[in-house]
Image (cartoon, helix red, strand yellow):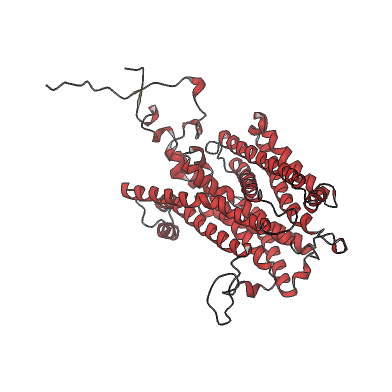
Length: 478
């Protein structure tokens, strides 16, 4: 006997006010407003501040390339390297920039797999930052070889059959770097581009110029927004997120092997891989905040990049900063507990030797400053967050400098001890690398949506069929 079943209307019970989370898009902005606001940054007239920032960045970039050209034409002697400090600012800058690039893939891949919806407003800019940081990082290991034309030849770094039968040393962690960084850069580029496709189609449909419509349409790959396109897109994005997740952990672990597999006191330690990964995420989130905090005010994006986003990033910095601080303490403990006098002296020399100022600058910036984020006032004042983010990046550069230089400048023979002093070429090359990074980022935000339009729309209440604004009726339980 058939039983009739009364249809229950889709009523929704509103949660208590104290359990309501701050929305990821403020003021109940509509999808149309989101498109107009984000796309308007690209479509509008180029502001004066952008031209000024680009001019300063291009000058810095040209300064860096001129210093690199001078280095190649003259020799490594223009740097402040000496015996025994054969690595200094070159590898310090390489590790620094690779670390900066870690936040982009972390935000995009790991937070995507963990279904953290707050990533949507910041992932596009962070992914672009990753690519530009890898470009900056790639310059230093090539030019530090001295004879750049050999470094670029097949067989020197890239395994390729050649008439001289010269093959790379596969047991060298420097070669592991080549594979790790190139793989990381390639997957990050694919991940960034895949996420851009729906927004490129949006820009194509909004474009009024035939040239813009052609180029946006070319790179949108014929996107129409059909169900089949969205299905394929989400599968591809999920696969790339799965591929990128181990890369976040592996790339900086491989970079740490440059030091950890050696016998140099201060380097030969097993804590380096997790310590370097935590430090990379720490510095990467610092750079994301350095870029996005001023841009959200300049571009009027406070409703999309909300205080909640900033607070959550501050909490990530607090967590990773605590891990880094733990690693600093554990290094000293292991040096004492291991009973190796050379290892113990290396760490005593870091804290109380000629470079004591660098070590205590590192401790102040990386251990003390992040703990200010325990206080909500510090996490919700944008000027304060911006200031701490800069301090974090300064501290992480000092960390790489301390690890490299203070471990090398005093080796086993006191007769060969020396003090490293950077030359103007060292300094200007590093400062100029920020010009290259800023130039690429400014061009990115001028010609492409710096926030993922389609992903931000997906976290609004209008996109949720179970929310009253998305179609469900609000009422009591039935």
